[in-house]
Image 1 (cartoon, one colour):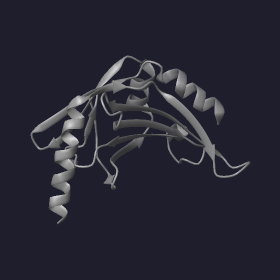
Image 2 (cartoon, rainbow, N blue to C red):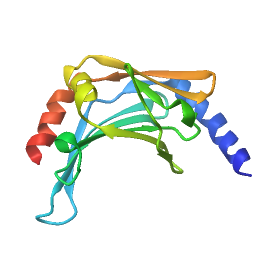
Image 3 (cartoon, rainbow, N blue to C red):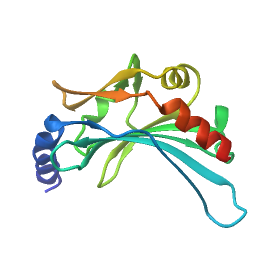
Image 4 (cartoon, rainbow, N blue to C red):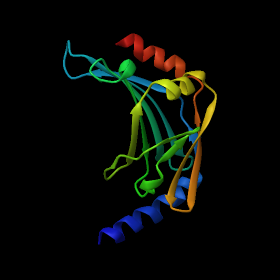
Length: 158
């Protein structure tokens, strides 16, 4: 039964992925659990299916003083359910491991520092590649222009 559901999800997701080409600009958001609580801020870009508007790939940089990471920042990449987990996701020349999946997406996370931080803050664009099967690469272009401005906005909000 589980294999049937996974196959169904893979087959129904593939047409969406081949049509996805639109990347939305970076959007910022800050929230807190309660008044006076530390802020958790996000800069997010979503690649959506050009016809349906359904999200395909979402890249988010989260900042919070509560994150015990360099720069208190984390990069999270969300991919469609059915992605080939052992292959991970490649962003530019960096490969990230897929750590977990739930019913809506599969996730890769890494501290937002060093080479990744430099890549994002430089702007331009980077290829984002993952696999839906061991031999089926899916490629998108992650637009990084405008990211530095969004990142500065969420750092100032802290």
